[in-house]
Structure formats: structure tokens, C-alpha cells
Length: 324
Image (cartoon, rainbow, N blue to C red; front, side, top):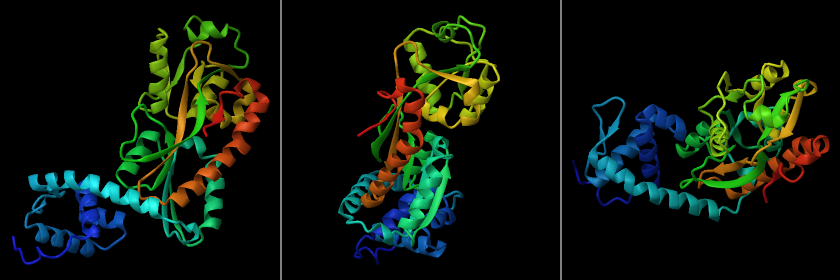
């Protein structure tokens, strides 16, 4: 390969586009994510290869795949780009009104209350910004953040940490038991599987399902799986109809208001456990934007969800709380 461009300085844009293309395997997908033209992507990748004097991609393959030298180069620049993005974010003085583009992902738990208010609030505070709102599972949101398909997300914190992302814990959401209002068995018997009510659970691919299953194993309880659902509202409807009982959280329970007259929420009768919801961002997301969203989400949670549940279920006061 020609060495005529080897004296040119490396372009940060070229490195960023290379990183995206290595993940996407497509010039068009890279262009869409970076919001540039295909020809711009092609130009930067060609310039980068000419600068290095090696082929980073096997251009004959579709989708595009990295050569062995391309893989080595990607490993070495990933950490460098992470450090650059983090430094840029830390240096951002941050006038949020000047922000031009924000991609925000939230779990379904926030769809009916927090997210709509947040969208209205941000459109007013960031008038020049184009927004993309995406609802997905926590696993999907974290993956999209790591792939730089989102800038910021609200998700359940998984057991493993985020080595390449920044997170701010938001909410301590304890697990509770929800029974049909007319259920007569003792709570401890229900959780131990000693009643006629079957256990209705979240789909096994969800983080919340894994947390519940791990806790039941720790306390030596094995429950048959009669019904699984990816939607909390479906579980609440089934419990309200008397079809079984479930383990969920106060936040999720709050979204099933239409069924509340037919439901009863109880503290988990064995060793207590909880999930943490966090605000997670990429290193290059503006600190001022993160702080603005963090503040608004916290106030919305207190006003719309935490305070009403504390009033109706005072036993939640010390456990269903914001995390400072």
C-alpha cells in the first residue's frame, strides 16, 4: 500500500469512524450512526489505511470484516478513544441549550410516568436539540450504550460493573410479593410454594428475572414455572385475575394502577433484596446534560411514584428510596 500519506497526522474522526465500522461491518450503517455521508466514511477509512500503510478491513467481504492487523489496531485504540471521550466530557462546561443531538434509552418501567415528563422538559430546556427516545430492556440499553447507539440510558444495574460506561445509581427498588386481593394463604406459605397459587414470573432473559431467581436459590426455594411474561402489566393482570402470585418491585407495581383494587403488595417475607436503577452514560456524553436529566428524573420519581407509594404503603418508606 502507498506510503504517500504516512506523514499526515492521524485524524480523530478517522479513528472514531473506524471503530464504528469495525462494529457495524457496513459503510452505510456507519454513516447512519455517525450522521455523515457514506463517501465521508469511505474517505476517512481510506486515509487511515494509507497513513498506517496496512489494510484494516478485508474490503472484498460483505459485511466488511477486520484483517488481523485491523483487530490489533482496534484493540489498541479502544482504550485511547475511551480516555479522549471521558476527557472531553469532563472538560465540557456545558450550556445544555446548545446541545444538538441526544439519544436516550429507558426501560419500560418509566414509560407511563417519568419518560413523557422528561421528554417535555428536555424539549423546553434544549430547544436546538434533535432527540431520539428508545424503549428497551436493560440488557439492550446497556448493549446500545456500549455500541455508541445511545448517549444515555436508564436501566437496571446488572451484577457486573460498567468498565466502559459511567453510571449514577438512582433508585433503590426493593422486591415485593404481589397477591390477589382475595388470596387467603399465609404469605410465607405462598413464597415457599405451599399454596394452591402458582408463581408467575418474568421472562428468564430479563435482568430482573435473574435477580429473583438468584435470591430464591440463595434461600433454598424452588418454585415451578407455570407462566412467564416479559411485561410487568401482564403479570399484574394475571395476579389480579387470581391466576397466581408474583415477585416484582414497588416501581413496577405503581404502573399497574388499574389493577390495584384487585392486588395486595407485601414485603418479601424472607431475606430482603432489591434492584438498583441507574442513569448510565457514555464517556463523551456532556456532564451538564447528564446532571440535568439526573435532577429531573429524581424529582419526577419522588413526585409521581415514591411519595404516593410511601403514603399508601408506609412500610416502604425506608427501602423504596432515591440513592444519593
